[in-house]
Length: 335
Image 1: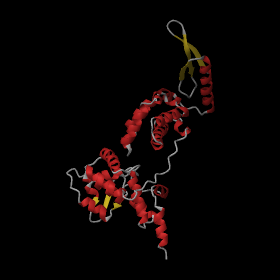
Image 2: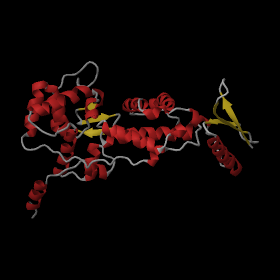
Image 3: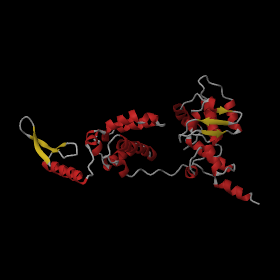
Image 4: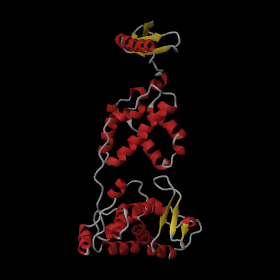
């Protein structure tokens, strides 16, 4: 049976109502509420759950802030994840949001929806918002499955995720490749080499800039990527032109193929695009261009996927944009 007692301050003023539930076979439960009605309602729910054998201890999730859970996640979970650097950035942003000051048990779908609206007002794209939600959802699942918080629900599962925009279909137009490479050379020969290499290999920007000479085999014309976005090792075949690009590069003492880092390319490439008078082209569009060229050269989907590293045909289709005029030309060549 629950006992409900008034709580008063030193001057005798009523400050709330304390509930204590003691039932054999269960740990003692104590909570304080602002009104007696709230106290009675909570006690009725807890006693009913205990009687039906469905009660779960909620004391930890009712006393743990999301901020504290995020800190534990960073300490225990992130070190073992491949994308820990980028996810740490997402985690830090969650810790700065108002929802981080709420107890885990009190966070509802509407609180997550409000955070989504805030991110959208900050200019974050749909994919970025989805990445934020994926991290938070994983935290709630880990807390429930591994941290002993079985009574914890996952409020992220209750909200609608922003829809991803349609896949980009930007390809290099006539004359853009030569103008782009010329603009890159005006910055550095290496930047131009990186851009040419991207078009030749369909490799991702991070994969290219993370290359090491130990993974390059010029005789076999391959480059081995120990870590990829998919978390799997991949051997990428190189065209004759890609091999020529690598042969012209000086060897670095640190073993890296390129001196450029991600931030350097992210700064220099848009400037080169602007200098070349090109509109609406991103570095990732070079991967689209290279993938489409593979199909135009006659590679079938499985062969193209082996080169690009796409794990399923749906993703490969999203990144492949074949010019209709090229298909018309092939139809004309039919006997």
